[in-house]
Length: 87
Image (cartoon, rainbow, N blue to C red; front, side, top):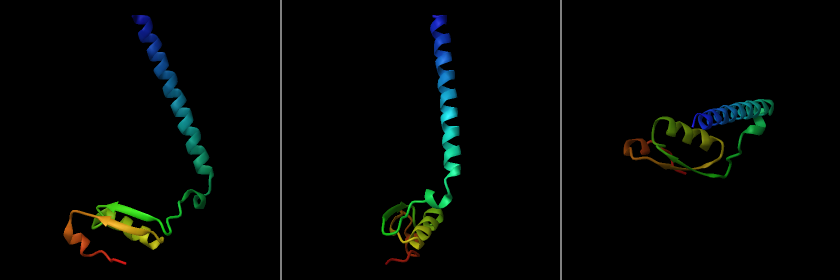
């Protein structure tokens, strides 16, 4: 029984080491790619935003609309929806 516990612990350690090396290399590669190639073009895309009437959802709606996305805002707060601009 002890042998299997030691083997399982070694398996977990090797898995954690592999994951840390993988994610470290992934972040290194992503950091070398220029920022303009990492962004997705949302112009003409339809975007559904929940909570788009206020707070972060509203800010996200405005930012994506400025980049040319078609926004569908969904919010339970009716007072925030009255401030939205519909096109």
